Length: 252
Image 1 (tube, rainbow, N blue to C red):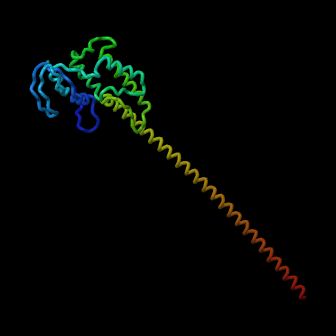
Image 2: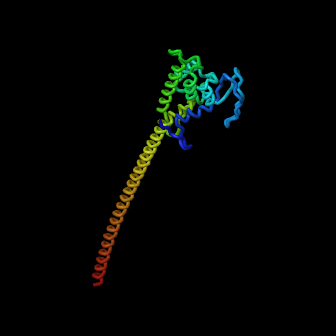
């Protein structure tokens, strides 16, 4: 099985999101004494059973595997709480519950896989089983997220209340939809500009036709005027000639 390595460029994969969730703090009950640890992540005080201690989840998983501690599930990871949140999610189709932590989904999966025996609400069967409730909650929220994509804008997608793993799983599809909407918007904008340019060209053609018509009419009027003036001039010249002839006859 090959996994995609994260190079610091692009988005995290679901596997990487789950891996990073192991840095979350969890409460344990140690089964034996353990001296303090000075880790890069921080200082871990010594364990003194049955005193509880808060340590990184990854360390709790190691100690749990070695049967050196029991993991105390977080308060929100219980059948009663998940059932209440599931009911709220179903009654509010336009919103996501804010009662879940940022890494709720991946944290729940990790704890259930490694320490199901430490959670009393698992293995019960039926609708009150924690695994069944978590599966139902995830499906309801996924359905609401898909419905939200129908109202997706080309600039952003706002879905407050989603967890990190939920966003990671949704990001690929949502990104493709956003890119498609942007391309569609660009195509519509180009069509609109082309229509505007065609309209401007038609207006210019109409104006040029009008000006040409006026120029032709003016040219014809000028020609007619000149012709009339020429006729009048010829008539006057002929009249003057006749008057001159009559004057000559009078002299005789």
